Length: 245
Image 1 (cartoon, rainbow, N blue to C red):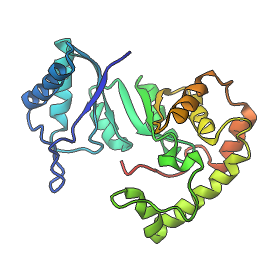
Image 2 (cartoon, rainbow, N blue to C red; image 1 turned 90 degrees about the vertical axis):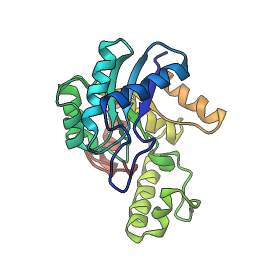
Image 3 (tube, helix red, strand yellow; image 1 turned 90 degrees about the horizontal axis):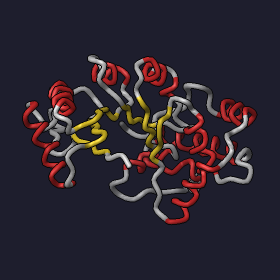
């Protein structure tokens, strides 16, 4: 099993939009402390989880590269849906993986980012395949989210609430083509059907949810008819970003 970690947000200064890693040496020291904590000599994949360009980006890249040369990191990547930042991070061509929000309801990466990843041989790790829970089918127009959950904007902000309600209408349409599988399984199958996708992070809160996620690996591929129906509900490159990053 590959060991993957992320780095970047600890100590991040949001007032000036700047990470705490303001030197290559500090970045390397941070990774090496993780190696000791994990009791390992190397990490298979390390990802910068800061999703926008900030003043210390070059320190991340240089630090990752030096750790690669030292054999302490086998590959490095970034987590973002900002196309310009992704290209900047990969300016030297060393980025091996991109973690990005992608789902039936958010196909925006298909337009530019996925072709770029394919051209530059960058593996894609998908987060948010269930669209922050929308594609589980458990939400309704009356759903309310707790204090501190950024999804509260989906019912407190008029514009975002309308987008949320539109997403729920799409969910109703998707229910009609799930067949004998759950809506969440359909959503995971769709993501995995894209040849650019390397792996997916679905998340699970219960054993039953975990079991259903695992079952997806043994399901037959989605038919061209079902994929065509999905395209009618959310066109290629369409939808909207669900995660704020």
